[in-house]
Image (cartoon, rainbow, N blue to C red):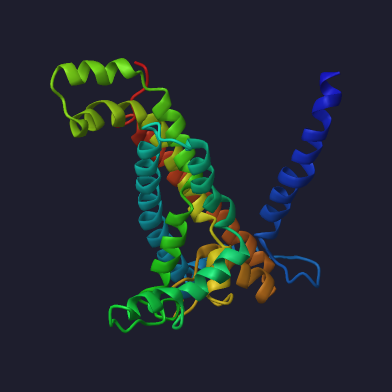
Length: 284
């Protein structure tokens, strides 16, 4: 009976996950354009990466995005979780409202809206105009285009906020009461009690958000019109992978890029786990 109920999951694992992964691994060693049969070329696709300047640019853009957006998003999520944890009225309503951006942030509609908001005639420049400040095309300027995508990522703080809120509810109140009796202020309590006891939750959110940030695609594709512009300033690694695979029909090279991304994400996750023993505190 157990095997019967588990069969759909194992079937999905084989057909949707393991099968495509094996096919991608094979195609990464081939020259394949979707129209003709794959031609085995060995490690040529991987050696090409060393000589591809746009791939190097996409890695720089992606790492800049991850290093900037993830800490800002987690800081915003933790700040709002601390605010909601104080037991305000209508908590369920505010929790739903703040979670909504996480559901919509990856959608095409929100990305289009974001491009309009930060456009030359967008809401941001209209707001600045009230103060006599001449705005600019934020999404069309190489110096600020990536920053708008970072803001969009920070805006989708709902999911980590809910997880932080659940973690805060698990901290015993007696710790804060004892600290108050000893004369510790709110800031001291936050540094000595909240942060250490919340480090497992911070670590969990950090790993998830780093993996998700490396996989970001829709925002850059819509805001840049699929080009990664201006001047490749929003050329995410996944966007360049899409351009090579479905734009240039260089599916073998795109498969090799996909496996490189897998290795990068795995390495970042391993580094986080290795470093966690120095700053993550569990019950012991």
